[in-house]
Length: 281
Image (cartoon, rainbow, N blue to C red; front, side):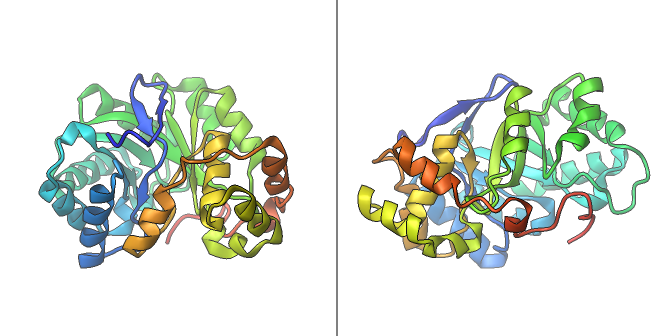
């Protein structure tokens, strides 16, 4: 494990690296090269998904890396058409085969709304729990779940979600859902932590970057880390991947955190679809 990357405890008993490499929109050779480069730089948390259609390339990079399996934390996600329990099982087996792994460290339900399956979330969650019982998955969780989506799992589940991966950045701080996750022992993972780059030109971000001697992207990522989030900044170049990872040499003051907090636009700051309407990509 790269020593500079903090580990957060999960409610499953496992630990998760707080800084990960996201593979969204990386396909083919770019996905392979990106994961190889990230691992060489010191990333030890790789985030992929069935929806991304790059698990085979990610798996090839993992297999070629001169790093022990237990030193790499691998996450994948159940795609929207695969919520029916038997289909979920088949899709997990395909993911493991493509990733060339015996188990996943973390498996998430990608979105709360299935494309085809007409059942509620609990049969899908029971299938997820069975994957843990069988040793196919170490921890399970959800992605893009609002509090009302989580409610039946929290009320009826035998295994609680370890993680909820949600959109979160200074323009859309998603504070209420963060608070809900924390109250139920669920780690928040932030996708699009840089608001797809749009927040980097904010005068307050530029000013804070000068104050701490860091790049604007590093300031925004550190804001998320100080909130306790796990982050996956998107980076398509070696230089940007290295820059993103170099975020541990400074701290943001309470005043600096508050100035970034003030950028929150609520729902108007969301860059992706609301989970209540997203059922396909």
